[in-house]
Length: 435
Ligand code: ZN
Image (spheres, rainbow, N blue to C red):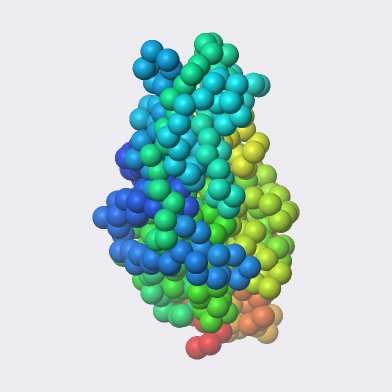
């Protein structure tokens, strides 16, 4: 049996993830460009990382790798030469993938290119235009209303040129080539929950697991959303059969309850493992069925791929008012929430690592536990859960049931079923099915 050391020091782990999110926050990321490279470089200082560059124009399934976008500066300047919107203040001020522009225009003309959220007048919205060439700015609605008539100097010092899409993977070999895929998007600029939280958790998880003996091999992907997962799938078609389970890591730092979105298959082992862990956590949580919207689970669960990949998050995309705005900032995420999310990930992976079938070596009648010192003291009102765990393991270890099957049927947490199996192996009553 494998011990993933799931009881991490929550305070230390939470603080480490939060500080990594803080470090990455100022970088202007997009689906391509130097912001992604710089982000991956910093991840690569913490875990071993293979960085891949896929040239613009490469066909990946129904999509084409776009031109590479980079930005140096952008602003709107009023008639007095004051910058009323400045990319240096916040990188959300520029629509992602904006084409270069350098011109003068009236306020009315400018407004055609300015995005605000009238319902949330004090925040900057997050907007992109990856696949249709455009340019634009985003700002607080309350500030737009205070602007006098122009003319305004409008400048975006950006480039859209042939280059590449950059992504990275961290591969941890296990006893088998069968893989667990852990995927997070790293294409959003200064937005904390979506998805610096996911980047920080994925990095922490890889760092935690890389010193341990593992049953499965693990592949951690740091990719731009949508186009990145499509690219990875298109370039790794021969590897897809090895993926036995996967999770998309997104929005794991807010103070909401954990939420699990099932894979398209609905009842894959990963689905059962995460749901089991959440149900036995004794805390508020949600389980959602698959739907073809959200993050990269859309691609991993597209019909021709149909991998057993779910998404383990806290508050889902679009369900919090700070979503895709400047209010999804470092104040919005929390070290305790990050640590709690990490714990749910580790407990779920611990189930996968230890979900094996065993054989009861004394299946004719119940083996006599007492003579082996394996009969725990009974409570006044019936058997203890410790005894029930041992009896369930013995009863269902016929070679056809794994420990997760047993935990589900017994209604006992996986960790206790695993402990019971360990005790019974040591007592000579149970053996691995393959031995
Ligand atoms: Zn997003």
